[in-house]
Length: 454
Image 1 (cartoon, helix red, strand yellow):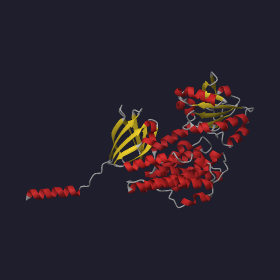
Image 2 (cartoon, rainbow, N blue to C red; image 1 turned 135 degrees about the vertical axis):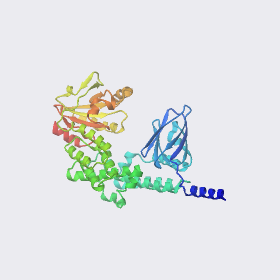
Image 3 (cartoon, rainbow, N blue to C red; image 1 turned 120 degrees about the horizontal axis):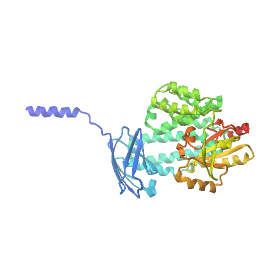
């Protein structure tokens, strides 16, 4: 009888204990024609490198804190992957046809095979530049067509969990609205019509949308991108209507919408990584962020950028360069003293840089008899030296063609705090900075600046 009571007590205790949900994911794969030593899984604050064997196999246990979308990087190719705690995920692929060959097996095979099919579908869309160059009415028609194709794919995917469908439906909505938010800016850039304004009716379809959803922000990278685009558009309008610096307008907009919290800081910090400029509003921008900041690590990074930018405000002496010239020897900034200098920091692998070349050539032709030196400074790596020389010859690039001595780490590049290219700089006849982040050749404002200086 005692043994029976003891057994009942043990059963009762065990039945009251909560089952502990596993936090790990077993991820295995087999890769044909593999030329990479490792793969990397990242996302949601998680990152892990997985070793790939000589015969192309890999296997690892991933301890993730969040279920959701991650990125798988193998060599130079990447693909989205969906992970949930406790799942077994299998993958086979052939690197010679990476996206087309992805096949998933295991507990969440249906969800990941859908994501692979979604990526392939994106490659069949009308080209980005053609979509965003369309007039507004035709843009909306094409965008709705694209959005419907993704919805149809999701709805036709079998064995996909209801929870995934619910989340993915929201992801598609976020991406669709984000495309609309970016239309005006991309249209202006692609058509060179900087006076273009989208109609207010363009945004009516989602005027009740919640742009302050903390939960969505924490759990969806697509929602984060949407908020960044939305508040950037609002800030741009506020700036153009009041001549206020756009970075200051952005921070004020976010500060008003999110009085405190992590969302506010992340939006501000991500914007300032590239949006803080060495201009007359620099002090106000920095102080607004500093006074509202709640993340010491982010504040430290912004402060470092701020200290760099304070040395680059208009009128300060420009950092120096002395780099190899395509035509032979070296050319220094001192060699160009007495001329206005327009510097294009670029690289052969940079798509946006290459798209500026036609406009740069036109600018050089139109100002060829003026007191201005056009300098193109490549930050290509040494291994691409021959590619740099070949591109200059084949594209018949004019101006002074220079190559920096240590790509991104070259002193001139780091002194200017350059984190993205193309980047354009104007220096006056005395070697003083006019603009450390000048308009691109495709922007009509550059001609206004030139005419004021020459």
